[in-house]
Image (cartoon, rainbow, N blue to C red; front, side):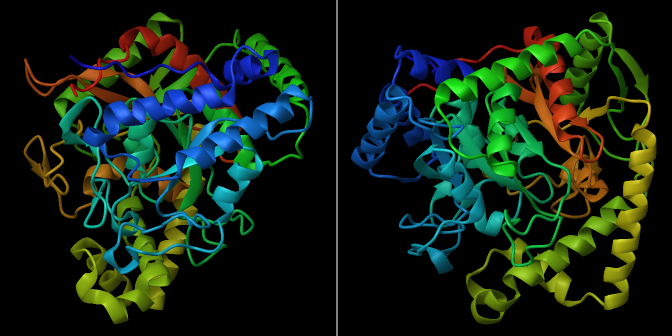
Length: 484
C-alpha cells in the first residue's frame, strides 16, 4: 500500500508550536527521518546524510534554548537539506561529479552558513546533476532522483533533490541555485514553490560560482508554500541577529496582518502561455495553465493577454551561460575532460570559442531585454507564464528533443520559459497550478505557474504569489505517495 507523504504545517505554525512547548525540533526531525525511510530508497533525493544522532543532539540543544527564552535564529529547529553543489564543512560534497566523489570540504559555502546561522538543522545533501548542468537530476556518483508523483519520471533540475525531498515531507527547508531554471523547474515538476530572486551581485552571499560578482546564477530556495519560502529567503538575503523565538513570532504576525489588509486590493496581471507563439508548450501544460487563468478570472483578477519583447534572449543566454561554464569549469576541463558529462563539455567548449565581441554583445542585449521587460511590467502586478513547457518526462531521457512535434535545437531549449526570464534579470516565482496527464490512464503530474515580478520587488512578488496560491489551491491536492 502507498505510504502517504507527511504534510508539515507552515513554518510559522511550527515555530509557534516550539514556542508553546506543544512540539519539539526533535519530533519534527524524526518525522522527516520517517519520510526519508519511507520514500528515499525509491526517490533518491537525499543520498548523503548527516549522522542522525548528531542532528537529534543539535535539535535537543535548540529546544532547550527555546524553552529558556534564549536568542535563536529565524529558522530554529527546522530540518534543512543543502544542494550538493554547495560545500558543507565535514560533509561530502560531490557536485555530482566523479572528480569529486570523495570530496569533503573544510568550510561551508555562504548560502549554507547563512541557513545554519539561522539555526536550521542540516540533515542531508540533496542530489543534483553533474555540476548542475541540465534540468534532469542524475549523475554517475549518486544516481537518479525520481519524481514522487511517478517514479518513472524526472524531478527536473538542477535543484531536483531538494524539490523531491520537500514533496515527500523529508525536509522543511531546501536551498538551491538557478542559472537557467534550476529552482523553478524542479519545484514545478514536484508540486512545490521556488523563487529565482532578482539578479543581484551579492559577493557576500555568492552565487555558487567563481565570479562572486556575477548575476546569471542566483542563490535561492524552495519550500512547500510561499509563506515558508518568504521565511527562508529572508534568512538568506537579510540575515538578522538571533532573538527570542517569541520576538520572531510577534514580528511575523504583525507582517502577516499587514499583508492581509493589502490582500483586498485588486490584482492586474499579464499572461502569455507561449510568449506570443515564440516557444512551444506541450498541450497538457497549456491546458493546465488555461484552467489556472480561468480560475483566477473567476476570483476577480484582471487578466490581460500580453508578453514583453524577449527577442534575442535565447541567443544571449547561450553566450552568457557558456562564459559562466568557462569561468567555473575551464580549469577542470583541461585536466579532466574525459571524466566530464558531454553536456558540461559542450558548454565549456562553446565558451572557449567565444570572442570578446560576442560576450560584449550579449551584455548589451541583456541590458536591452531588462529594460523592455521592466517597461512592460509597469501597470501590472506580475506577468504569468508556464514554469515548464513540458510535463515531467521519463527519467531515462536526458532532455526533450522536441515538443508536440516541434524539434528543439539544443538541450536547453525546452526550458526557454525560464531562461528568458533569467536573461531579463527579473524575479520569478513558481507555484503549483494543478495537475495534468499526457494521456488518459497515465500518471497525474504537477504543473507550475511562473510569476514574473518587478526588479528588486521580490517581497511584493511573494505577496502576489501568496494570493494566487490561495486562489489556485482547489486545482490541486497532494497526491498519494509512491508504493513502497
